Image 1 (tube, one colour):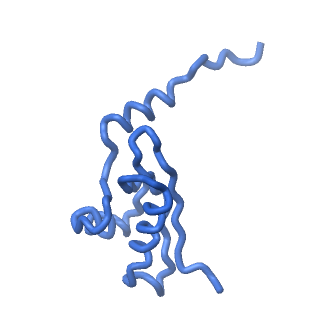
Image 2 (cartoon, rainbow, N blue to C red):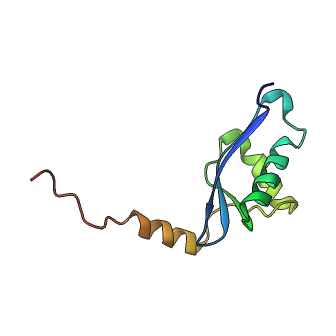
Length: 101
């Protein structure tokens, strides 16, 4: 058999969110709740409380907006302040690169 869809996500432990980086469903299987079922399974197995898409393709904006508004899954569009601060802190260099000495 072949894949009908895939999800790439990672648990963000500081806020128990599940960041979704990629959610793909083959065109012939779209509009059959495959994406929603993949998200539900990922949420159940991850232990996360909230799904947060962090990369949304232009043609998927309506899907994510509908999912967030329907409240069928705990989807939040956008990062909360705590997530932004943790990510910002993680990006600060511990020791700036000084070049090869």
